[in-house]
Amino acid sequence: MSPSSLHPEIHRLEEAGLLLATAVGRSRVLSIDQTHPVVKPLTEILDYLYGPGVIIAEEFGPVSEIELLLIFGSWAARHNGEPGPPPHDIDVLVVGSAKRADVYAAADRAQVRIGLPVNPVLASRRRWQEASDALIRQIKASPTIDLTPIEAGRKERDP
Image 1 (cartoon, rainbow, N blue to C red):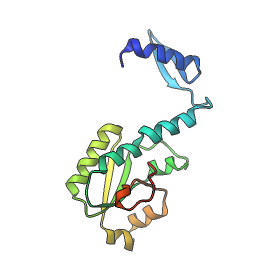
Image 2: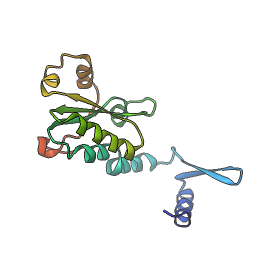
Image 3: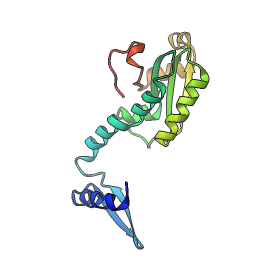
Image 4: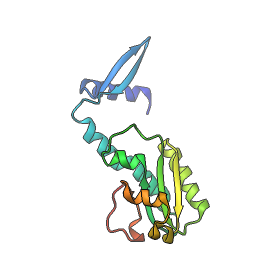
C-alpha cells in the first residue's frame, strides 16, 4: 500500500483509539493500544483468517502422505490461552510417510510467509501411535492445533 493510501487509514485507527503514536524526532512510531476492548477479538479474527495456522495448512496441504498435521509447542500453547512470552518459532508435527524434502520445502515456504522459523518434526504412524519416545508423549499431553487436511480424515478444520 502506498504511504498516501496508508496515512488516512492510520489516522482513522488513531482516532478510534486502536493505534498509539509516539513522536521520535520527526518520525512517529505506531503501536497497538493493547487495552482497547476490540484488540483481542480483532486479533482473533485476523489470526483465524490470515494467521500461521492458515499459512501452514496452505503450505503443507499439497504434501502427499500426511495423515496428521499439528502445530504444537509454545505457539499452540499461546493460541490456546496459556500465558507466557510470545513464541519465537512454530513447531509442526507431520505424521505419515510424506517425503522429508517435501515437508521441509513446505516449512521453508511457511516460514517466509509467517516471518518466524517453522520447525517440522516427522513421525511415522507407528511412532505416533506407540508414543514410546518423550517428544511424542509431550506433544500428546500438550495443547495442539490440528491442521490435518479434511480429505486425510478430519471431520472439521480449525486453523
